[in-house]
Image (cartoon, rainbow, N blue to C red):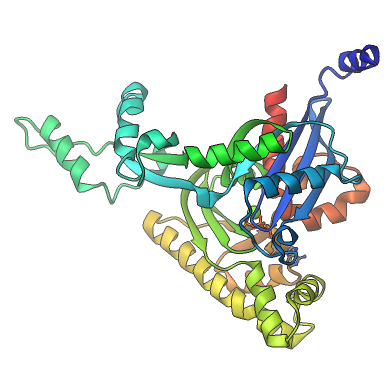
Length: 384
Ligand SMILES: Nc1ncnc2c1ncn2[C@@H]1O[C@H](COP(=O)(O)OP(=O)(O)OP(=O)(O)O)[C@@H](O)[C@H]1O
Ligand SMILES: [Mg+2]
């Protein structure tokens, strides 16, 4: 036994294997990748709805205790078709469990910045800094807007540089993205991982996983729209850096619930109908009902687009759709007609190699798996 496993270890030396696990509010998504000849190869993927673990239907968002989530995770990994063969994983942390802000700092050395950022961050983080894990990164200079430096830093600049001259002080400021996660959140996910019998290499806020899975090299600002069950998350990203984020309190489960009420269907039947028929216009009445939710979301997206463009004086080149809600039939057309910019549906499985016969199904389910793929890609690169 050991002889064989040693042998296979020898032969598979560069065949690292990694899991990405996205614990969403309505479903767990899992992706296993393998490194082969320097390429990320899709080994398996699967998903499990969490609604039934709280007596609710598929597609509904639920808040479960860590024990139940771990149970669901174990159930998913046990499924024969999924056939997970490693414990090494990366796990996502919901965007809502993080605090993210862009703060302005003077352009000082990285060493000084390392001291100053945590002090400045206190103003933006509503809990003691000792209770969070804080991370930050400088937003590349060329992108810093010049029109709205804060008064307070302006005054400071003047007091040090204006001595004896009337020359205006140089306005050298940088934007820094700060990200904080509460220790309790990390402990909660660690608990799930341990109970699920897994080994987590890292916890990553879902937005970063999504960016890795769906963005290409484009230099112009892009908006990612993640339509989940209970909410729709918007992030504006430029050259790999997040500039702004926004959460809309409507998601795909609102469509199901409105359908259920308007058509007198059980939520379960409404969910099936939503997925099968969608908003293609074929069933005009159904499309109208779906639009009640979508109109609200579209208006919020357009507001966010406009407010970014106004603030930064830049245009957003496209909106990239991810999340299970993006799989709604007819959504691509509707967004194209309603957004003041180009729209593409994300195809994150295109970042990994997979058998050709899966091409269509992977295109269809891809948006839902964006976070899990991004996590698996990072974990795989860290396994080398
Ligand atoms: N083919 C489909 N057509 C329409 N809606 C769909 C389809 N597939 C899934 N959905 C909907 O997508 C939603 C789930 O999306 P997703 O898995 O991205 O959410 P989540 O990750 O659990 O939520 P969140 O990210 O908000 O925590 C459900 O409400 C589900 O009904
Ligand atoms: Mg999600």
